[in-house]
Amino acid sequence: MTFVVTENCIRCKHTDCVEVCPADAFREGPNFLAISPDDCIDCALCVPACPVKAIYQEEDVPEDQRAFIVLNRELAAVWEPIYDRKDAPADAPHWSHVKGKLEQLAR
Image (tube, rainbow, N blue to C red):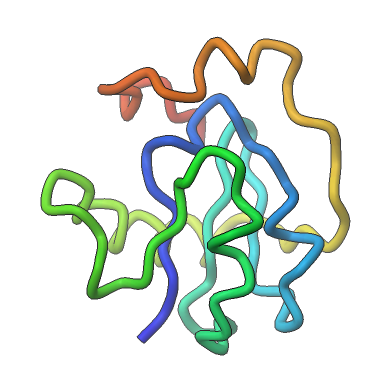
């Protein structure tokens, strides 16, 4: 199993999770993070570190977020690794719990 970043991360892109990841499994896009399933060691340290509760174990991803399992794999294959925490976008609080943000995902 691996962990999956879901919709709540879109346009929020908090990187607290990156800071605690011992496997350097996170990949950075313009306004979203993805987890490389090939690098994730299933340690779960990222889950409590995410302030918007966007990370789930693959088997626990909510039904309406299941597309993010494939999306994480796809994006992690082309995006660069991120190793250090960065400041979240200034408007992250506005986007933190907005639903239906998939069309906002910048690739």
